[in-house]
Image (cartoon, rainbow, N blue to C red; front, side):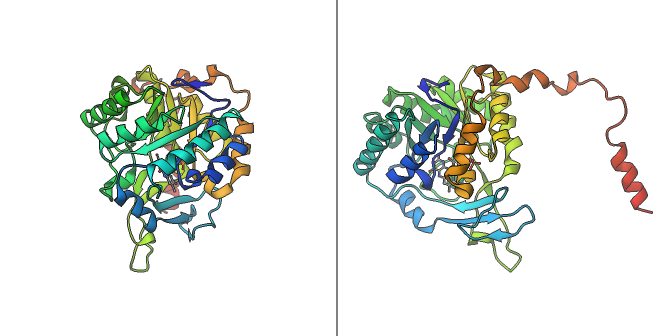
Amino acid sequence: MEVGGLVTANPVWVGSSELTMTLDGITACVDAGAGAVVAKSVNESVAARLQLDIADYAFVSGAGEVRPPGSGLPGDGLLNRSGLAQVELDDWLAVLADGVSYGAARGCPVVGSITLGDPAAAARIARAMTEVVPAVELNIGAPHGREARAVRQLTEVDGVAAAVRVVREAVDVPLFVKLPGQASDVVALARAARSAGADAVGLVGRYPGFLPDLDGGAVLGSWGAWSSPGCLPMSLYWVSKAFSALDAPLIGTNGARTVDDVLRFLASGARAVEVVTALWIGGPPVLRELVDGVSGVSEDFVGSALAGAREYADVPPLPSPAWLPYTARWRSSGR
Ligand SMILES: Cc1cc2nc3c(=O)[nH]c(=O)nc-3n(C[C@H](O)[C@H](O)[C@H](O)COP(=O)(O)O)c2cc1C
């Protein structure tokens, strides 16, 4: 499958996270069969790196039970703080170069990633990365941008267009732009990113989260970024809307845990899916399962669900009121 100028053997990509922050992490993802691996983000900010010192992770079951790092179970949500890779750019480029050649020998592109701080600095870093990587992803959707000044989350069309344009001018390899889901019109952000030169658009970044521990405090002792299986339909909303409205290759992310979830991203219009939390919980076997589960899916499948989705105005009346069983049960249980 080709995505914005990058050819990958399968649509299951490993998204950027601490799992791809070392050469060992990157090569483990390649060995487990990833279609592509997005390396951990860097930027120019010392503060963004220092933030990794306060990184923390809490897995939350569907029933609200909070589990410590390392003990997440399938289906859990993840609330976390994170920071960027604690490495100088030259050293990071050396890691990327090794990862890229390891991946290239096995048919798996390794993509460089920048989480936006200052756009001009992002452009300089992106330019340097193009010496070693086949594509660059620019993350302008990090929910941490709401809590930490070292990274930025852009939610306005003009800001998105300006930042993407600056980075686009600096790079001559495919440029992917990962957007936030917290904007009144994410499709407009995707259109702006595409018009400013993004070869593919990533939809959507995680959401900000907050969870009281009911013990007088808050889980993690702060706000954080939240991912959970429940985020899937919210991500697919924007993927499907962008697929309908734009002529832009889309990369889905946020909420894919199972083979069916990946298929739903593809059916909504994504050409590839970046997975992270499921791999934190289940490790390489989960990645292998996802890759095996989507083998044989054809390009025609991308966006196929849209054929069965209508505007509200075009939905015909249902034969009997769908709310009736619920209101009937409510009335009878109230007696
Ligand atoms: C611990 C953690 C660290 C992350 N770090 C980055 C990052 O540095 N850059 C980035 O673009 N996305 C980062 N992400 C976001 C993921 O790449 C991915 O888009 C997100 O987790 C949604 O996918 P998921 O539901 O499969 O986890 C991170 C996610 C997690 C859970």
